[in-house]
Length: 116
Image (cartoon, rainbow, N blue to C red; front, side, top):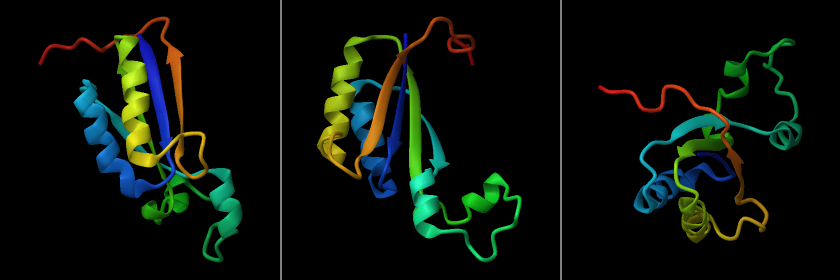
Protein backbone atom coordinates (compact mmCIF):
# COMPACT_ATOMS: atom_id res chain seq x y z
CA UNK A 1 0.00 0.00 0.00
CA UNK A 2 1.05 3.57 -0.65
CA UNK A 3 0.16 7.00 0.71
CA UNK A 4 -0.17 9.56 -2.08
CA UNK A 5 -0.15 13.24 -1.14
CA UNK A 6 -0.59 16.08 -3.62
CA UNK A 7 -0.31 19.76 -2.73
CA UNK A 8 -2.20 21.45 -5.55
CA UNK A 9 -0.99 25.00 -6.14
CA UNK A 10 -4.09 26.34 -7.91
CA UNK A 11 -7.39 25.33 -6.24
CA UNK A 12 -9.26 26.07 -9.49
CA UNK A 13 -7.97 22.69 -10.75
CA UNK A 14 -9.20 20.70 -7.74
CA UNK A 15 -12.40 19.28 -9.24
CA UNK A 16 -10.65 18.40 -12.50
CA UNK A 17 -7.81 16.65 -10.64
CA UNK A 18 -10.34 14.70 -8.56
CA UNK A 19 -12.18 13.60 -11.71
CA UNK A 20 -8.88 12.56 -13.33
CA UNK A 21 -7.91 10.54 -10.26
CA UNK A 22 -11.34 8.89 -10.14
CA UNK A 23 -10.97 7.87 -13.80
CA UNK A 24 -7.74 6.03 -12.87
CA UNK A 25 -9.51 4.03 -10.16
CA UNK A 26 -8.98 6.14 -7.03
CA UNK A 27 -12.06 5.59 -4.88
CA UNK A 28 -11.57 8.04 -2.03
CA UNK A 29 -9.66 11.26 -1.48
CA UNK A 30 -9.36 13.54 1.52
CA UNK A 31 -9.07 17.25 0.70
CA UNK A 32 -7.62 19.87 3.02
CA UNK A 33 -7.39 23.62 2.63
CA UNK A 34 -3.75 24.52 3.05
CA UNK A 35 -1.21 27.25 2.57
CA UNK A 36 2.54 27.42 2.54
CA UNK A 37 5.13 29.63 4.12
CA UNK A 38 5.87 31.32 0.78
CA UNK A 39 2.25 32.50 0.42
CA UNK A 40 2.22 33.81 3.97
CA UNK A 41 5.50 35.64 3.40
CA UNK A 42 4.21 37.16 0.13
CA UNK A 43 1.02 38.34 1.78
CA UNK A 44 2.80 39.56 4.86
CA UNK A 45 1.12 39.57 8.21
CA UNK A 46 -2.37 40.94 7.95
CA UNK A 47 -3.16 43.89 10.17
CA UNK A 48 -6.11 42.05 11.67
CA UNK A 49 -4.10 38.87 12.26
CA UNK A 50 -3.87 38.12 16.00
CA UNK A 51 -0.48 37.86 17.67
CA UNK A 52 -1.13 34.16 18.29
CA UNK A 53 -3.15 33.12 15.21
CA UNK A 54 -5.26 29.99 15.06
CA UNK A 55 -5.52 27.77 12.00
CA UNK A 56 -8.86 29.43 11.26
CA UNK A 57 -7.13 32.80 11.03
CA UNK A 58 -4.71 31.50 8.39
CA UNK A 59 -7.52 30.05 6.31
CA UNK A 60 -9.95 32.96 6.46
CA UNK A 61 -9.58 33.25 2.68
CA UNK A 62 -9.63 29.61 1.55
CA UNK A 63 -9.42 30.43 -2.14
CA UNK A 64 -6.08 32.13 -1.56
CA UNK A 65 -4.39 28.88 -0.56
CA UNK A 66 -3.63 25.43 -1.87
CA UNK A 67 -5.52 22.19 -1.71
CA UNK A 68 -3.82 19.18 -0.20
CA UNK A 69 -5.25 15.92 -1.47
CA UNK A 70 -4.34 12.52 -0.11
CA UNK A 71 -5.38 8.96 -0.67
CA UNK A 72 -4.29 5.40 0.04
CA UNK A 73 -3.42 3.19 -2.93
CA UNK A 74 -3.42 -0.58 -2.68
CA UNK A 75 -1.87 -1.09 -6.10
CA UNK A 76 1.55 0.31 -7.05
CA UNK A 77 0.54 0.26 -10.72
CA UNK A 78 -1.88 3.13 -10.07
CA UNK A 79 0.91 5.54 -9.16
CA UNK A 80 2.14 6.23 -12.70
CA UNK A 81 -1.46 6.52 -13.97
CA UNK A 82 -2.29 9.07 -11.29
CA UNK A 83 0.85 11.12 -11.97
CA UNK A 84 0.07 11.13 -15.69
CA UNK A 85 -3.58 12.10 -15.09
CA UNK A 86 -2.52 14.86 -12.69
CA UNK A 87 -0.03 16.32 -15.16
CA UNK A 88 -2.67 16.36 -17.90
CA UNK A 89 -4.66 18.73 -15.69
CA UNK A 90 -2.03 20.97 -14.05
CA UNK A 91 0.96 20.57 -16.39
CA UNK A 92 4.31 18.94 -15.70
CA UNK A 93 4.95 18.80 -11.98
CA UNK A 94 8.52 19.95 -12.56
CA UNK A 95 7.08 23.29 -13.74
CA UNK A 96 6.51 26.13 -11.27
CA UNK A 97 3.12 26.70 -9.67
CA UNK A 98 1.69 23.26 -10.40
CA UNK A 99 2.07 21.34 -7.17
CA UNK A 100 4.04 18.77 -5.25
CA UNK A 101 3.15 15.09 -5.40
CA UNK A 102 4.76 12.51 -3.14
CA UNK A 103 4.21 8.79 -2.67
CA UNK A 104 5.23 6.96 0.49
CA UNK A 105 5.06 3.26 1.32
CA UNK A 106 2.72 2.33 4.16
CA UNK A 107 4.04 -0.14 6.72
CA UNK A 108 0.65 -0.64 8.41
CA UNK A 109 -2.81 0.82 8.08
CA UNK A 110 -5.90 0.41 10.23
CA UNK A 111 -9.54 1.23 9.54
CA UNK A 112 -9.36 1.04 5.76
CA UNK A 113 -11.61 -1.98 5.22
CA UNK A 114 -14.67 -1.00 7.21
CA UNK A 115 -18.06 -2.48 6.43
CA UNK A 116 -21.04 -0.11 6.29
